[in-house]
Length: 356
Ligand code: PMP
Figure (cartoon, rainbow, N blue to C red):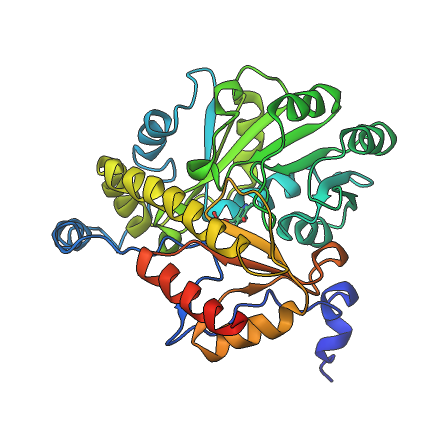
């Protein structure tokens, strides 16, 4: 007699839903903070040539094949920090949580924020404490400091800028949080390329700090490469949890290729920042729409009957993210990834029609 699935799978997993990814075929896809541009034809041909030389019969170089050195230069990672590579920063979050998951340990994050912090705490069976932001999504420093003092988190994840709200907290507040934390603080800079500040300069010199980044938002979401920088004593422990071949051969080649052409991606990030201002201005002009300040490649808005606008855009083949239902503070909130100028024009045209 075989035991049924629901007697073998953990009850907390049975009760969960899989991470939702909306079907996007035929849509203007503005739901996942991807970069709208593919590589130019010339670069694609050159990349194809390099990929054709890949030894896909062999396991990848477990140390990343020179990628860490290139990332150090590209991202300004200080010399006294070591680097951990992940299959997306999603995997880095998993590795950190697994390594710190002593019985009774607490993972802390702000809310609303990136859902994987909490999910990983559930997967690793540790306590999770979500500390609410203010209603305008700014950081409530006294509340957070109290929660840290009370719960003594083993790790605090803080997205800088935050997803899904787009704002960046003040650097001084974040430094106070790191100072007050007994455990590790992970500053998640997934949206760093679109932001006015970074704590990467402190990685390696601040004892309990890890700064995490990803290539996903700058144009390489498909290759899955994230990384973390921190003191060698932390990175050495995290590296024990990492599957040895987590960065595949094709990703290593593509990332090295991209980093030798980093100017292309920097120009695109600059263009997206300009597009973000235009789109923010356009959105704010519609009646009842509140646009939250963003230092990321997306804009979050709140408006009455957001579900109706979401459905309208969908009927116009534009896919954004409906944040309603994800967290009580996100009722009537929608998130627009900043797209190419053409895509953003299409969004504004559809909004003009909706609000007419
Ligand atoms: N951190 C934040 C704040 C994010 O928003 C995301 C993706 N939405 C990630 C990490 C994960 O990114 P990736 O795994 O693609 O590196």
